[in-house]
Length: 404
Image 1 (spheres, rainbow, N blue to C red):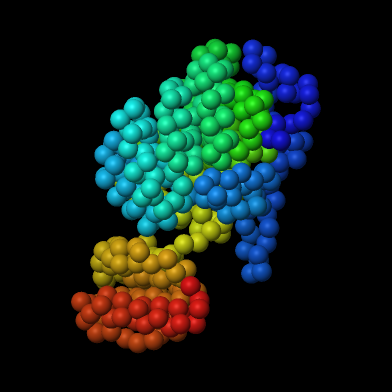
Image 2 (image 1 turned 90 degrees about the vertical axis):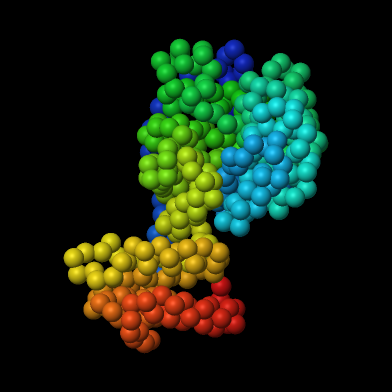
């Protein structure tokens, strides 16, 4: 069961008898996060325990890897463009893709999109239960809905029955910008308590119908409010959590807000799937999500590229060099560390943990591995080509040894 089994608690959450949601004393509720040490003594977060649900055959929950998802920004009615973008997202490491289904025309092309998709798809539905049914008929494996705005009890029953029959997963997506009017009035705004009460009320609608294959998200554009809401919810439910900071903003601002908000939540063990919401190419959302997971030691994909911030001693265009190395390695999924340094004196030593790296100076550069200099390169224009040749040889040797 996702909801507590205490009968009185459930009765308080039944429609028209919603419970007051009080702020949580995190210590007394037993949700203070502790760290797990790896063999090299690097602390990593201990996941908040949840039950397991499935989305397109992929298990979700604390016993499984945190999954990366994004959302297409194409017009879903343009099936060709949407399929192309799904492919780009998957190539970048996206594991679930959500797409808007705003009307009947969009619903009609879902079978073609679904048949071409290599990962589970999630239909984003608002208000019209018929669109949810058509998405499930098309074979989509997930729905993002608010059961409370789908319509009458009969409509909710139809959607839940269809999701159950098709083995689909439902995400209860609570957004601080679209809470129920009575909750806004009760709490004086889109507070964390209001968001949690909304989620609990929607969870009851599914639980009462015997449907447990769902996850919940509580999203706000406010980082502190989002964190507080997830902490409150985690103390009360054991269903998986989809985490994100909604309307985070453009690339720089959005990445910073998401990095802070998601970083805190994930460090506390909260989050079983995530989306980094950016006003940008959704492929960048996926890359940002992987970097957040990597930075916390939760998952890795592709090389980690480290580079120094530059200073007055830098004698090469390090920014362009680092960006070009990053661009050329964009499609590589092998896990290793690359260093791009701007000082031939200190670079190899400062980046001694890197599997392979380069350090540039005035009209020369060094290529090194694990702090040991492999060779010196004369000529600034030769540094990048020579480094890429060394890197390709490194990858061939690494893959031949079965280390990826």
